[in-house]
Image 1 (tube, rainbow, N blue to C red):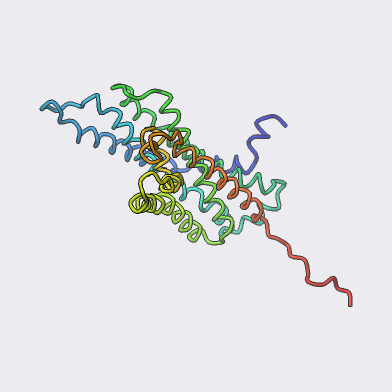
Image 2: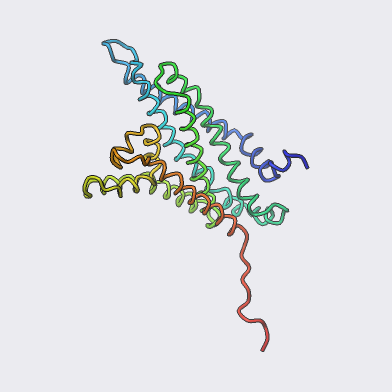
Amino acid sequence: MNVTDRLINPVLEKEFRLRMRSVKSIVAILSYLVAMALLAFGFLYVTMNDYGMQAFNPERSQMLFYFITGSQMVLICFMTPGLTAGVISGEREKQTLNILLTTRQSSASIILSKLAASLSFMVLIVIATLPLYSMVFLFGGVSPSELISVFLFFLFVMVMLGAVGVFFSTMFKKTMVAVILTYGFTVVIYGFTGLFAIFLSAILPRGNMLAGYVLGTNPMGALLSLLNEDFSREVFGRASSLQIWHIFVPFYTLVTVLAILLSIRYLRPILRKPAGNGKQ
């Protein structure tokens, strides 16, 4: 068995073939790129009124980078749950999960292969948006290291949301239920945590760091701290060197690991031992 055969097992190869060769995948990538392009050029159009003529102010290229990055984060959170929340429940609904479980593939191999195949499609979409970022480098103001850190953060968020989606897909038989719960989880960590952090900052005395820790569970808050270090200083105080993404990454690493381990644990039916030993 060569290295390729060990890395790409039959489950992963099947998922790659089915997902990458379908017309829906091409339409999804095209739609994503069109949406991102419209947002980027829309931002350019709105800001092209400086100097009393139709021209883009190069000083706003960093704002363009922030806008594209934030928009992409929203789209990632909208698409990732839909791609991963049905990978196991869909097999169960098609009555092919039992056949899959009788193969030589372990539970860990099946879960990780399903997750990798789903996320590979999202990674392909995100990489396809690189030409849009070339507009930012055309005007300057953003370093390649910032772009790399943003894309690594995108990857981390995709893995986290994907693991949660696979977990719900494993625990619930219906795909619709798994999708709703995964989107509900996404809404909570994006919307509720942000609103709760704003509420805490309004009622707690200045200098209290509780709102910052709550914001550390919010992906947009972590992204803002990654793009601008001063944002974390405004939350935690000028004297603190703690960044919001320092809280976000360890916390959701734990969530991701737990979601994957629980998915592996409950993928196969658990045989319960009889109450008695059969002896009188």
